Length: 303
Length: 290
Picture 1: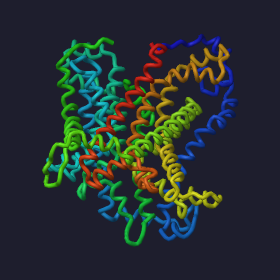
Picture 2: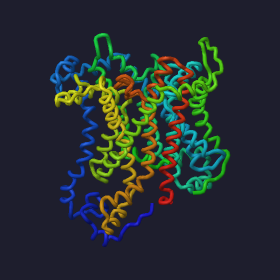
Picture 3: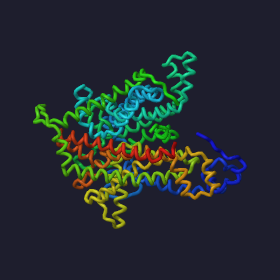
């Protein structure tokens, strides 16, 4: 990007309040106190928004540590009897915790497959012109636009006929439908940001292509691979319709198992809430690791 | 950057093509196959031509679901995009708390969709939900299982809760890429806040906004799990969007021919509208961008 920085002298002069509040480069020692004073005002909108986001999650949490009786009979913002019984139900019952294992297995499989096949493809798109490349790219993206509901039934029939029904691989492959195009799109954006001279220098230095790709090129786009993996993980983790349609018992995801808390004795709200809370954890962990790249991923993609 | 012509690049693309062909092309062909045939069971199919298509295009049920779907996507875009931009603008550019905020904001994006539905189903319930209970105590008659308007409000607020962060994150990334010098130059010119937004920030945001609008349109148009969990498409069919209707038809009633024709029309509408958004949004700024 072109950096049209103004000389330091004039910058100091125009150092008005609002550039300071933005935390501009020019803001330095003298006005720390003024900055601190202005911070609360700027934070009002984001804070309100975050409260709005957290309220429902908070409610789910308090429900998960209440007894069913307390949930139904009284209305408390904070539980009277703090209990982890609901969580214990999940951790001790294999039919519950198997669901988490199943979900994790197919999500990881999907992420590995998607990024694995997307890497060479994205390289081809970013470096070469070939017959039908633009059409192919667009065709890939159209798959991201395909409603899963359209594919639910055909997938069921396809995977049943090839004997993949109710396996982790079936769900992983089905989720490739929308994750592979996304991974190609994101990686292509990152790869185009790497100068071509690097490739050429490596060839002159006598690197073979696989060695160049793994030793030199992949470290260059490490953050891009991280972002792509994150998005694949995310969209595979949150999808339910296909995952539910393609599994019966062996590979049933946790989110499908959750629906069975409706039993003869009514809803088991506490366990439902606990199961919901536990589904937030993998996402929260993953998001923490990629927090600096999340937004970058799409921003760099070619449109 | 000049790209080399290299037909061998196809070998790099081959795995992706094979994989996506397996998980997209074969199922899509199945759908096309069903859409032009009819069956009396026993796997005996016969040619039905375009009957299913005309049938769907004329059916009242499809029209109302389509109308609801467009209304929903329209409302979603009208709320989420401006709100997302506003929040991204209000976020400080640097600071200790920025990463914390981003992580908290991204949290709803990583919740499985049916859990999102469950969260809101519980949250808005009058008997045990914080929101429903509070509204009831305030004397507002709110019941999303009985009243269509309340059901709509719940579903819309849920979607805003779920997806606005995506717009915020994208816009925030776009704003981060604007050098400070731009703002300083605007200060010298005495530009107003609105002028800064209109002539500096908005043009820079154009690219990420295109992605945000496209993604939000596509995903809201395909929405299935969340409203299904919260309202089940009801009350009546007030929140029966296209996907819910389709799944009902295909898996509930096993009406394959009609569902297949429905699927193809549905898919084509998404493609068409996405393409329209893309052309309008890129066409408008071609001159200013290049």
